Length: 170
Image (tube, rainbow, N blue to C red; front, side):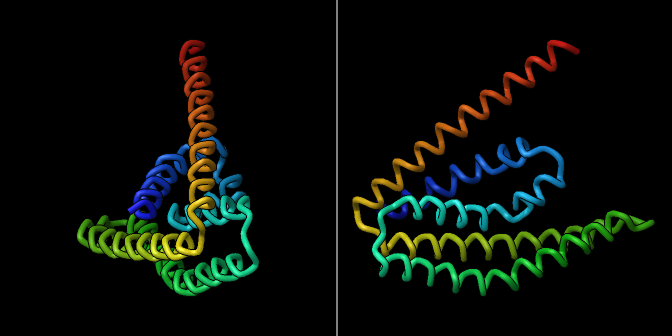
């Protein structure tokens, strides 16, 4: 139960934080360089991996966790390519001389299914990786998550103050 709650908290925090981080990065060119153009599910995995690197892991744990994500990345590669094809097709549909709402709806459903598959795959990999951690490491992971959440909250407050100053000056 504790692991499921931790996974849920992680995915919720990341789901709320990622759009803020993307907005803070500035122009699209900067997001592309920083990797913020990837789906949030993949960013969640990468953030989990960065957090795990801050733990004192045995060589066996490192190898096991690396294996969990290696398999997931192989499977996700096809999904990500399908998502990119769908994004290009959506662009074509939007740019077409005549708008086809049925085709857009069908494509949206397909993209949604791919996104759901990617989220399920990512969540399962994070859960499997967490299975290789000790209770003490899981507790430290929760501490790191809380630190990250506080940091993101401070960044959000800074952005809100900037917006308020801009609105007041115009």
